[in-house]
Length: 566
Image (cartoon, rainbow, N blue to C red; front, side, top):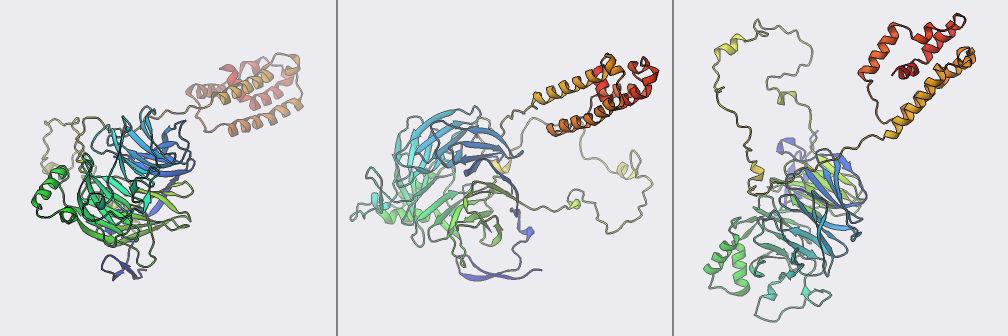
């Protein structure tokens, strides 16, 4: 039953009637919890560029890498010098390195394949977020956002840091500089918290400050090239680019997620900014920066919950930038809101009664991964329904059985219907199986170094102790049944009854110890067949007066005789 839902959404504050927000025809987006991952207390997550590996930062300072195809742990990165909770995690573009920021004010760079730590740098303040430079396969620079200081560029080779400007007042010569809201331990003024991110190719840094401004900075000369004022002037908590670099997302303290369209070219951003500044020479100071900013970013959409006025946690884009996702920051609820890029709310995912602390969308698949306050990672996926016509276009679902009359040539080697058709495929042409076609989702794969998509997994072998114990117990049973002593030869019926009762217990004990059942080998099957055809030699040489007892013993101790012949 489709019940109209009335909700207030968008920037126009108009009443929008959604007849059915769970319409699967709107696109591919997750709907249900498919699986969950547990390994200690996990805090933050990040996919690699292809979405084949998922890196998770834990509360004990370790970094666990999951194989997302098999949902198994591929590698664990642990440093003895770091036991504090991980605050953020970031992959390099090629996937060979991982940058981790921790609550003990440290930055750790790891080599993923070898599992060795490359470097460790300690900052003056706790970095809430750290991002590697996206333009290099082996980046030596990163962008760190400390707790109460300005964002800084960190050289991972030397450890040198360069603080970026977070306010237009720092570059303005007109009037006194207003007092800062916060100060670092070393007295440097800044606005806290401050969010920042690289552009798609890492040529510029976009900084969102506590005055509701987006500053576009060339980090090489540390000069502010443009400024965009956010409506309302609230603190910017998150700022992130879409995968294709065409859209910029901001999450402000006024509980509104805003999407800006990037008007600058992706690779020649710095040159385009220089040209804009030259064309606006008649302006100066803040007015010039605002004028340039209007030609760099334009407000595209706004997303909010006008009813509950909820704060947002870890908003981000989907891999193709067609969807926007944001988690509710309310305590005690695990709600994920999904909008399309036009601004319509298409789905609200409700999970367990646990707050969300981090969120990530899979790069190429309609999958969302969320981290709860209890340290559990939930995997949200689309709820697919079986539709056989999608696999075979001529398939028809029948409501009841029907009698099928086959064609006369249906099972011929070459049907007459196919003889008439001329094949358009030239069978003499060689098929190219070497050239790899570029995926449009990864059109910027112009790296010389090969990407790391999977990690080799070492298979775990079964414990050999269980097999040894079983062989020892079986050999004892064989010795007791086939010993040549007079006592065993002329044994009474009580002893045979005892052996008959003891063998199933040993079989049950063995069955509970093993983890998986194994099929008997061909040799064992041959021996069993031979014993069924002819009796054993020990039975032929037995005494006639105890023949019935021996036959009974052969029936009960058959498995022990089989092992003794082997």
